[in-house]
Each structure stands twice: as structure tokens, then as C-alpha cells.
Image (cartoon, rainbow, N blue to C red; front, side, top):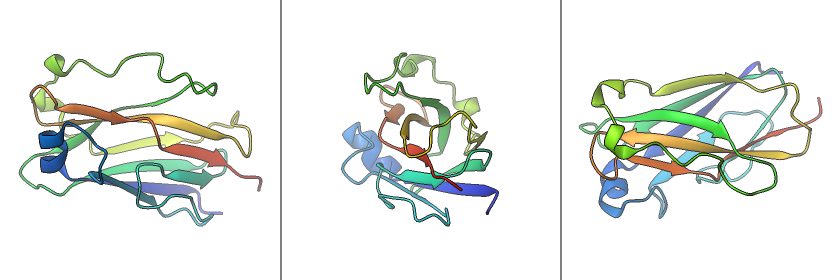
Length: 145
């Protein structure tokens, strides 16, 4: 079993900022899981994994002049009620924190096999009113070994 999985996220920064959304094809997510993850190339990526595996999230911007960084990754409640906390306040965005384009985590052992655990991927693109955006559609799903 591969002990690490890399999730690549490619953001069309110019289109995201001008449209105010990561939807409409502005975010593409894919991984290298050997377990044939679902919905590759979409923001609905469901990464198939095993408990204890290391996950690396990598951010790539299509616009090389406007950096994109991972601001936060948080799991959502299983009941589908959405995130407990609102996304970060864009007015508190500081451009000196735009260096985090890799986020690392361990798949928890408490995850129930076969259950999709959705997470919020919160991104920051430079500064301004719409600089912080998020999606609540990607997920991790543990499979039995």
C-alpha cells in the first residue's frame, strides 16, 4: 500500500476572482491514489484512502502572477448540515501568508470505511474583497484494506 497520496488542485485564479467563485470549471482536483478515486478533475473529488495514510494537498495557480494558497482545510459534519464556522473574513487576509501551497495531514483511524467525509477547502488568492473562496464538495473515503 502506498503510504502517501497527493491531491493536486489547479485554480484558474483570474476567472475565479473575476467571477467570485471556484465553480464553473475554475477549480480542478485530482489525486494519485492507487485505489481509483472518484470524480477526478472536478471539485467533487472523492479520494479513496486507508487510515494512517499521509495526504498532501498541493495548490497550483494558472496565473503565475497571482499566488494561491491553502488557508484552511476542515472536515464537515456527517449530517450534511454544512460547516460549523463561516469561511475566514476576507478583510483580515494578509498577503504575507500566501506561501502555503502544500498542506499535509494523516487520514484518521476513526474514519468509518465506506463513508464519505466531506471537507472544506479554503483558498486565498492575493488580497481584496473576493480573495478568500472555498468549496465544500471534496471528500475522503476510507476503504477496507
